[in-house]
Image 1: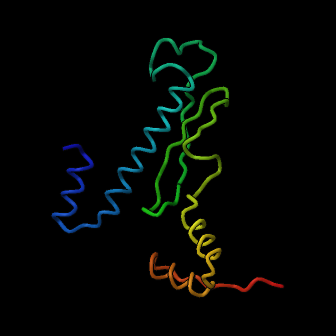
Image 2: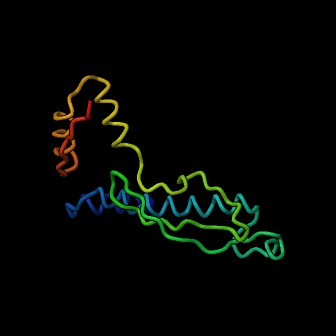
Length: 136
């Protein structure tokens, strides 16, 4: 078994929330993916001698919170010395995924009223949202 499977089994056995297991593994996978993306961009591995005097190198990173349906992910966004690294995994300045927005738009297109959509979101996410009628 891999770490995800064993953590999931452990959470199920101890009757913990499996959403937290998904959130933790998604967070670590996203951070590894961002690091791998920078490695592919720079064309050398971290701490590799090829990177010395190569023109661009790793330049640390900054943290970004990404809101998802599994909870908040704390991501470390890597950067390069020249500022040329354009990541594909998480769009710049992106703070949340568009799952909820897409869901609301899709439901509205199907003819579901804003009051019904508000009630659905409250049941699904446990948050109360008031609907404001659009000015006409």
